[in-house]
Length: 361
Image: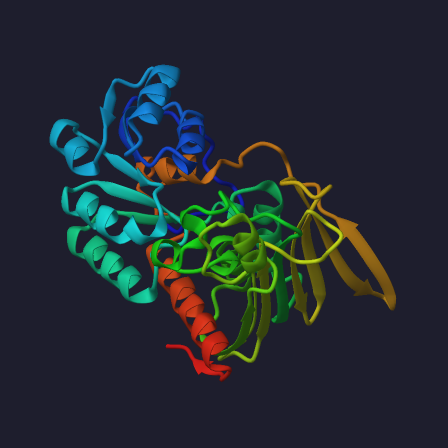
């Protein structure tokens, strides 16, 4: 049975089974420890990081005994059910494949890989081994996103013919001078870091239509100058924009920036236009809380409606992954969708580099 996002299984699902979990990478991975712990069936038995001081600190903080400096060492010593990969993008493929071949389910941080070729290899191994591979597209997993998806699938918007999805920062280069700004490690800048979230959210709400072509541009007018002044390493874009055309005739505009001369410190928004109505999700107060509104016409009158979804029944992405295993149901944010996103990101970067439209698929 397909996963029902409108009535997701809660973290309180009745089960006596415990899932032994290992987390690789303690940057983003530290927040994943907290997220997993919201599920009563989660048992985080091992963590790994190259930074031994951080490893020891997190082990003590969370009372985790299995401490390792590599996934290989972790797999040699631990009997795991799930591995969470939260390392620089360059290493997603090799670590994911290693865990899958060891017979372990994997949830991998976004982006799925550094390019579509690597993502396709990961998907192939997941299919070969029969193990689950989920991509952590976490922005699907909030109240507004669930409510919006339910509304779209009910037909209230009608056919969606246009969408715009953006994530802009005024000045927000993550760990400036580190791996995020090095193309060899990250695969790109804000497009592959922030844009990947807004792209997936828009595609998911639209039903993941099949893309046809992409036209894009990328710029580095601000962050590169700051990097030069501060003697930081930085060789990726600070702004990327793309127009994506789908085979069903719909169009999506995508924008992502780490450095842009805008009013807001942080601005996120995803808008959908359908033949019968429109939806807008945006962040509140330049933060990471969201609200969503529905716009429609009835009897010749224009109505604006704010969504007030229920607070219960919505789990984070990691708890949702565990629930899907417990209930033997397909998980959402699949590797197949992760591969589609990677193909689009590759096409966007190619179009930005060549100045020409790029066919997808």
